[in-house]
Amino acid sequence: MSELKVRLRADLTASMKARDDVTRDTVRMVLAAIGDEEFAGTEVRELTDDDVRKVLVREGKKRREAATAFDGAGREERAARERAEGEVIARYLPEQLSDDEIAALVHAAVSESGAASMAGMGQVMKLVQPRVAGRADGAKVAAAVRQALSG
Image 1 (cartoon, rainbow, N blue to C red):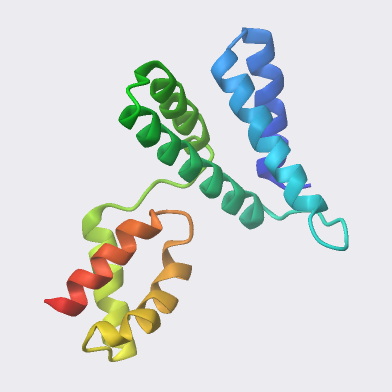
Image 2: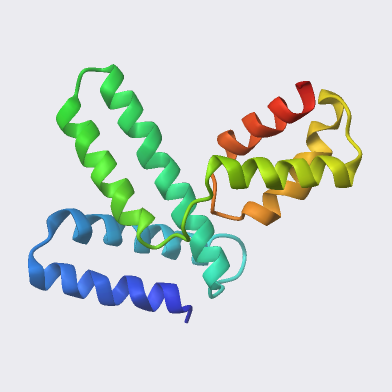
């Protein structure tokens, strides 16, 4: 079993004992998403730490998008709950890259790929994505690539 999944289960127990509703509910939701991923497809499989991180990134993105939607609908209380859940999920993810670090990775990928225009964006993204792997939001990376290729 992946170390991250073991940590999530231990934190679920601790949050239940501490009566921390936000952490308890968030970790339960994440563990359910991990279980869904393990049973998806034709065979049951055990997720690696990298696979679990991908699920965490996906769930974190859902929380950010939901918070934005709730803010737009004037439901600040629900948006605050979604942000709090996002913060819980962020505890299990690697530290996020700064804008400067993303720009440096993008610059290196542009040089490596030889892309000179927006037509090469796909090539650059293919090189950058594995390097950021859960440490930066895809939209942020895409914006940096667009800026590097258009400027």
